[in-house]
Amino acid sequence: MIYEFENRIPEISEKAYVFDNAVIIGRVTIKDNAWIGPGAVLRGDYGEIMVDEYSAIEDNCVIHARPGEKTYIGKHVTVGHLSVIHTGKINDYAVIGMNATVSDFAEVGIWSAVGEGAVVKNKDKIPDESIAVGVPAKVIGKINDDYKKLWIDYKNNYNTFCTRYKNNLKIIKK
Image (tube, rainbow, N blue to C red; front, top):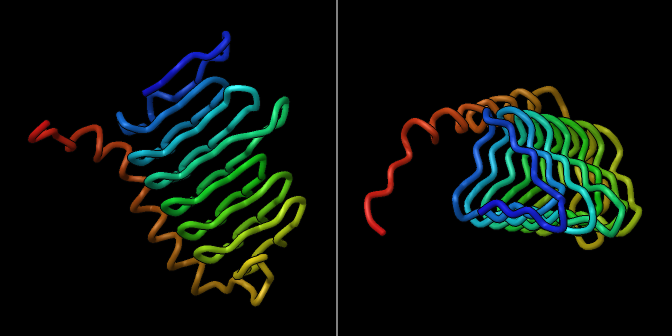
């Protein structure tokens, strides 16, 4: 469901895909070929959210921003199921593991991976091409070329979802 709130109107590319039971409220921009999964909530009621091209916001994620602030999801980002991003910046090609949290004013670098269940605390920065896990998230390694190749394949699969879901998803029972 897509809502205007106090003259704050979502801008969603016709090339994006947003599940009917996702909730998009207010100042939210969703760019070309971004995929917003079932149950996701992107709430731009008093902050702003931007989801750039080819990013996947998986099932039941929550994305929000503080008043007057912005949450940014870069290009080719994967935000795993049940994750929470709050006034954070997720740079291009990053992967946020399932049930991870990226808190206020934190930043995840280009090609970085935040492990499942990890918490990137307020104002923390995960450097480019780093692997961070734990509570709080700590860098434990670097991303290598094999990891990038594997994730490009995964990301390309999600990149096809916008068209595949538009053309092939059919309700069979209500």
